[in-house]
Length: 363
Image (cartoon, rainbow, N blue to C red; front, side, top):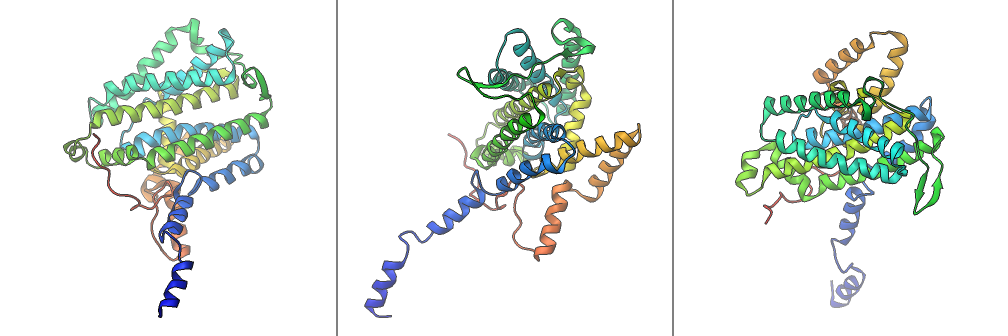
């Protein structure tokens, strides 16, 4: 090529050859890229495809709690049976704030989030002192302790009866009423917006250096510690983030039912959240939504057919563990790769497995 042709090519070439690829990578893995549009589309379709908006709201609430559990189990390798502590605490504190302090919707939810983060940080600070089965047993013991505390403080929690007539305040901002959430549809829309924001936030946490380091701690804690990381603080921070999101889900659930039952803080609630996480797929944010949806829908359908429906759900869980090691989302990914003829494998959060350099020690 002569000098004239080279000059013409230079004029038409982009200033930064990698700029187009950077934009594409951002659209694919940025906060509003990757699986986020698919989740937004599901949120629009759910109230239409499901029998009621109330069921759709319940699925999103439990999917939010499953997201929080996945942050611990899927990305931190921490199997916690204490998630009901934060779920129940969020339900109780937000209900008490609206019933006795006259708090609005947003202040009540904010109180649940802050208290859940603080409570989870305290529980995590004690639980992460042990590993393996001892860690699991400590979270279980904390859950049982919290349950009996809630049962004993019946003047505040209602005991066996729970807190009745929990209000669902309208959405207000600086004294101005923005929306009346008394109908099932309006409350679903509000919950869907919150879920989408939480989903984006959790994706950003996982894609951040903190998330990469948390995964490194899960894979080899001794090596991460040798690189200079304070692994204990990373685990406690993950607990605090998980507790904040779980408490938000508990507060939304109490407002959905207009009732905060004692069962919210029982060990069985922790078990259900862990089961939904495993069914959907550990380490998969989309799997959290699939797991919660499958659990709520199947439970609702089977409960109408047979009073012993837990036996069938237990059998389904055994089959998933044996034949779908990646959960429902792992099965979906396998089908997608099979029909697309293979291709690069992507991580559950929508980012390539090899995206980004390995984490560096923090100063």
